[in-house]
Length: 312
Image (cartoon, rainbow, N blue to C red; front, side, top):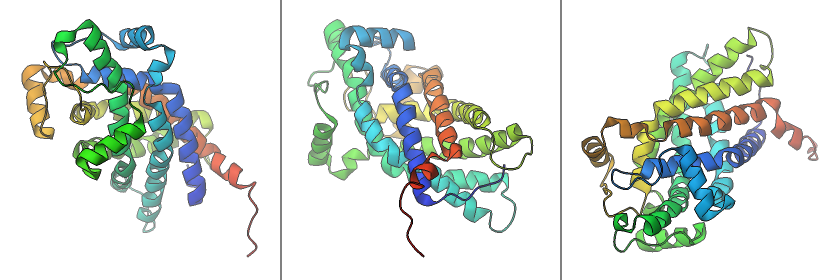
């Protein structure tokens, strides 16, 4: 696939639109993933993704599945825009001296993953509290013995209220809790995803000139996204546990990444690191498939074409 030169504004628009469409489609599955990952032994409320979604609809209504979606829809635009634009930026500069090798592709992905956590960490921090509030509320009703004394009711809190609370109590560090775990997840994800997508896309194009057909980009994005998602799922479980502020009385608390790994291994076994893996694959596959289709169709360029051009 021949690389096409795309302006930075077009890249940002493409990434933002793709993120909005993707999140709207898959957010309920992401909510199920968060709730399944946060369940610990002795406080299992949900048995599977479908069970989680059914119980969520029964207890919170249809829109309960979109709890926390406003945060994602607001911040996913800069997050996806930064991720895609940064990867393109690094790939462009790393290919100036010759062929873009696999190592250089991985370095570009590393740079993209590092850049995106500026937005990803606070977005995930707020989203997780809102998504998991329904689980805590359901536990309070159905399994009151599992809810820790003094657990704050977050069901009715908005993202802005949570933000103000975290800033007031812990400063900016409150919004960036779990930054290390987020880096450990997003950097390897991007290292796997971007080179894998680029090579799958190139294979699907069968050496033809110009960009690959949209269906090739979509399938490549889905395959690369689901593969990378499952590969880093253990770190995603750790990140979710570290960023969750409220938990049941029988659920462990963690002081950091190492402490979290040790307690999960001791109390739940290695299989706990795969909790929500299929949910995450179902979220990431279409999310990145849609992203790549929007990106390669050039939606951003089409929108910018309607703007008046400055005279040179």
